[in-house]
Image 1 (tube, rainbow, N blue to C red):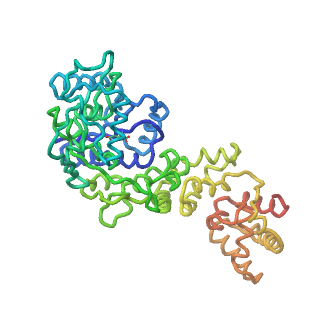
Image 2: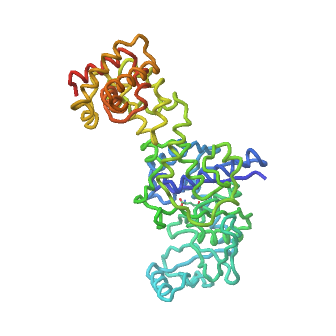
Image 3: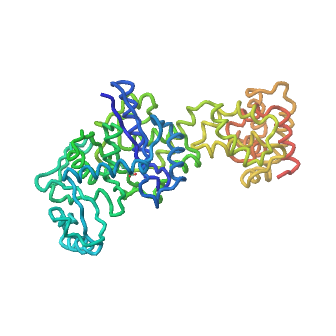
Amino acid sequence: MTVVTRFAPSPTGFLHIGGARTALYNWLFAEHHAEYGSGGRFLLRIEDTDRKRSTEQAVNAIYDGLSWLGLDWDGDAVSQFSHAERHAGVARRLLAEDKAYKCFCTPDELREMRDAAREEGRSKLYDGRWRDRDPAEAPEGAEPTVRLKMPQGGETVIEDLVQGPVTVANDQLDDMVLLRADGSPTYMLAVVVDDHDSGVTHVIRGDDHLTNAFRQVQLFRILGWDLPAFAHIPLIHGEDGSKLSKRHGALGVDAYRDRGFLPEALCNYLLRLGWSHGDDEIISRDQAIEWFGLDAVGRAAARFDADKLTSLNGHYIRQAGDAKLIGLIMPSLTESLSGNLADDAAGRLEKGMAGLKERAKTLIELSENAEFYARTRPLALDEKASRLLQDDGKEHLGLLRSRLGALGEWNLEGLEEATRDYAESAEIKLGKAAQPLRAALTGRAVSPGIFEVMEILGRDETLGRLDDALKGHK
Ligand code: GLU
């Protein structure tokens, strides 16, 4: 059987990380079956029936976010709203088959019913008063809603692939509205019809939809349609255990991109947030496709841990190719230097990237740390660097400059030896000599190994920067 999954976001905001994780699980499940089973497809359906809250901007954020994460969908994304006529047709069919009925309750009546139910602690909010009533008794001119005749006894059981069997007594489920008084289909109807029409075999989504699932199951049954399998994944919580919010660092996927996260890192993190494969923490996309299954999705709410995500990002930065990283940081580097890059910036970055990427947890950090390679002379020094060049720092720098200037060959070993010799002769620790060099050459108090930096900058640039610092340029 070909597995068909779908991601069905409502385009009312950005693609948040909870949604991204749902999309990832659906994508992986389909990919797994495409590679290792008898076929898999992943569909994207934009649930835009709420016209007031759905925006084009939010739809684009979903496309962008999914594309950035590398979660490509099969075929075209579909708009749920564009199927409204089909949804209404299904409701009319149910009406004709006497499986649904017209309800002429006024908004006031409904409100009274709801208030009374709430007061008595009943979850069933509508009492079914038009279920068996003759429509001829309807008040004149009243526009009815169409409601489904839900089963009145027994219980509804869902064999959820994550939650296990979950049961609700049918007398807790009221006759749900399929068509509103203005003839527009409800979300509940639209989801079931679309899932059926697009052949969805597995509905994988957040467990906030579990209560909807009971009603949807009944609708599938009443329509005589095959049920998809359901897998409701626990929501993501913040580190303090409460529902995840912006306060916990739960942002849109685009914000993670802007903050210098790699999609590989975010996917790996979201994958592990609620699913496990032994003790494996670092899981490549190929491994994820091979290993992913719903049986290893946990039942407990996952906790979002921003530090863990950041450290995973550091791992993926270290793993990434140098050229790729240079491409990724170039725009921000160019912007922060107002387009004023040294002629040899690209060459230096190529040589320096191996050392730079060891030290950065985000692309923003990487870009900032790389700046000194791309700068033109004279370098501006930050406060800490300036302090390193006060008092004897500058003196040491002057003497070191003479020794380095006299070097025959310009390579890492020779530079290190000359600096060590100087520190020994001046009876100072190596750091006391290296720090003023670092300040003058990078403008900062931290950088990759300073001998590597000097080798990459080359003789002229190194000596030039040292002279600038000695002349007191700031
Ligand atoms: N549109 C719903 C949401 O964004 C998802 C519905 C579903 O997956 O069935 O939460």
